[in-house]
Image (cartoon, rainbow, N blue to C red):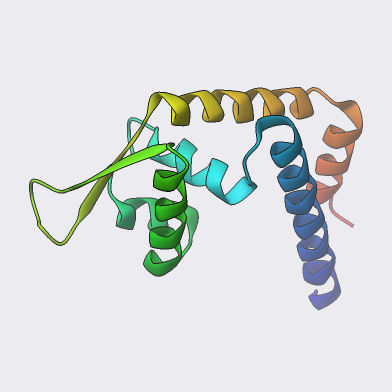
Length: 127
């Protein structure tokens, strides 16, 4: 059981590295920032840093640093929440929506790649 778990983790890590490289090359953004921006742009996501951290499984401190990067890059706007001065609400800028659309295209292209689909299928097949 432990060996299967380790193998699965190695495959997921390789997949994440490959996705990160492809997104950086073709969309100009890292996988983690793409995930943050995609989550921030979802209608069902509460537009605050804690909700994004929870959705991505990252700490609020990590999200705060990534949000700062996105603000500096012009992808996000941040404002103090109307409900709580301690919370910050985030929203995508036009530039942020554009980079998410480019990332979506990269992932859609990969999803149509048969070798990627075969590899992903291996993650689900029992041994």
